[in-house]
Length: 81
Image (cartoon, rainbow, N blue to C red; front, side, top):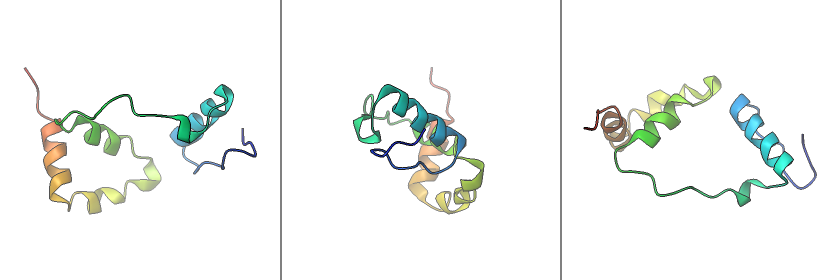
């Protein structure tokens, strides 16, 4: 659902569903806050990249040229004991 106070979302399934949920709750995107500081082990970046919408996966090649991205993704794939 699109309302006058909230801009139309970029059309991906995940964004569309989140936008609809925020509308149902009467919230704006600016009302959403991070739950906490991302951990240093890189799993948040790994998950973010794996959940990237299919029409944006072409960015993976560019992202994997960034050394800090590669390091974080590699760290995110390590098993913690």
